[in-house]
Amino acid sequence: MKLTNEYLVNVLEQVKKRNPNEPEFIQAVTEVFVTLQPVIEQRPDLVASGVIERLVEPERQIIFRVPWIDDNGNVQVNRGFRVQFNSAIGPYKGGIRLHPSVNLSIIKFLGFEQTFKNSLTTLPMGGGKGGSDFDPKGKSDAEIMKFCQSFMTELYRHIGADLDVPAGDIGVGAREVGYFFGQYKRIRNEFTGVLTGKGLTYGGSLARKQATGYGLCYYTQEMLKANGKSFDGQTVVISGSGNVAIYACEKATELGAKVVTLSDSNGYIYDKDGIDLDAVKQIKEVERKRISEYLKYRPNAEYHEGSKGVWTVKCDIALPCATQNELDGEGALALASNGCYCVSEGANMPSTPEAISVYFDKKMLYGPAKAANAGGVATSGLEMTQNSMRLSWTFEEVDEKLHAIMVSIFKACDEYSKAYGMPGNYMAGANIAGFMKVAESMKAQGAV
Ligand code: NDP
Image (cartoon, rainbow, N blue to C red):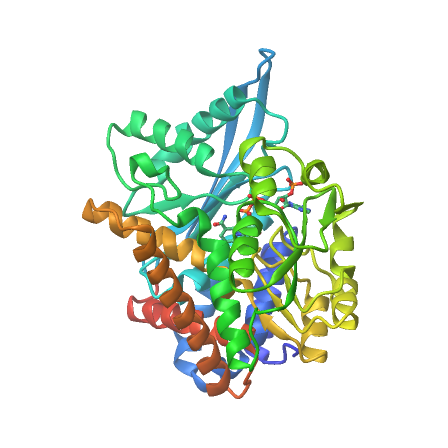
């Protein structure tokens, strides 16, 4: 699909002019605009109320210095970000990413996507995202704590349980959320649900750790079912070996699939007998080591240098769960030529525009990130609910609610894709369904 609607072409030109060094943000906006064309043609009222121009401009962007002292006594300086993108349907909500590649473009693309994703969950959450170019790899526990405390010493003044509720993302798991929370509580002298992904002993939700990976599989299962297929007996390729990848692997295996790969930014493992998750959890969650260590547990598995090679492994279903633009046109063609018929996204924007074109050309099933990985933030929403009630639900209760939300998200994608004449295009369905709720709310609240 091409962007031909004159109004949207002009708004996109303005976005490009205003944000010249932000390729990821422009990529995310372009993808959404292409699929919103039929809506804009039918809804001149949304054009008149300036909803689109307002949607692409964050409500607030905060950039700050994060100084901290390393184990050798040297001062280190990182850059911190929080982009509060859209609060039309609820407080800003979105994770914090710690990775050396983090810059304003990446945080803005993530915050923009988050706005639609949160809307799809059916829960009252606006869109936001934050992070830093701090690299957690190779840092001691004391250094991680000092960084997190310094980051929160600035961030605390911009967030709150009814204002902006951060969570984890790449490089931020329960340990980092704990350090952020401790520092927030100390400075504010209050115990509130200001962060999600917290430890279970101080307000965290059961099943939050599993939620993005499990949710991805629940969504994919619905998409497969609607097209006469299932996970049962299928070979699955997964990229990444972090939080999302591990729990996608666990749930896909439980649903009868055989997962044969995981990866990191150095390379990928291939285990033809199916990934041994106990070994992976020991390596990644306990020892915090590289995925290549897997061969020590399973000497018959293979390790290959280079993360992109993972897409050349023969499979039926691919679940990219590492990072943005990890799957390009070449990778998508390799998947298709090996018989892969379904790509469903655990990571945010893992497929380049060229890869997405291949999925449509080859008539593959495509589960877009905004919908397919929304289970993480949905369960964060459930954590907020439990914190507000001062109660906690059992694992089974949370998992059941997560499952119901993912089923409803797939239903919305399916229905909106059909209503706008693009049946089976779940990317368009997700974008339009997410957009409608936010757009109606923005229009109702006036030009703010
Ligand atoms: P983790 O930090 O737990 O794991 C990230 C994984 O991806 C690691 O294996 C990492 O390898 C790999 N990776 C990161 N950057 C790159 C890169 N540039 N090239 C190749 N591999 C890379 O993060 P999560 O599992 O939490 O997040 C993964 C993706 O899922 C992200 O896109 C995130 O935004 C998205 N997501 C996460 C949610 C959550 O709840 N955690 C919710 C919704 C989406 P290495 O160790 O070598 O860096």
